[in-house]
Image 1 (tube, protein in one colour):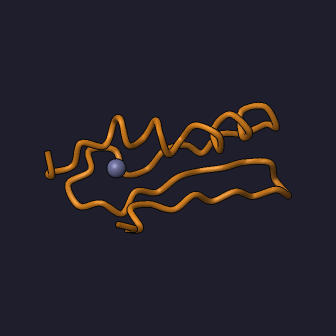
Image 2 (image 1 turned 90 degrees about the horizontal axis):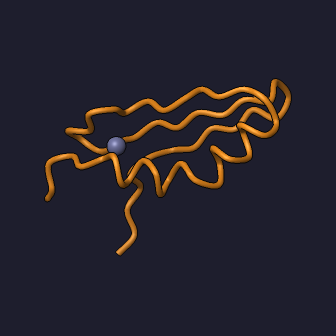
Image 3 (image 1 turned 60 degrees about the vertical axis):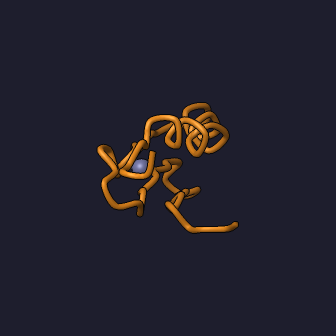
Length: 60
Ligand SMILES: [Zn+2]
């Protein structure tokens, strides 16, 4: 099953990234933004997994 639960935004010009969760009931729907090449890379690599672990929403 595929569902869009969030969106990752990466701004390569200004070297920043953020994540917005679209799941209702999310306790922390906005992650970031983070700045800097290393931070952005780590954020992009891990945010979906990290956020899903943190995003309990209502469906547990
Ligand atoms: Zn969430």
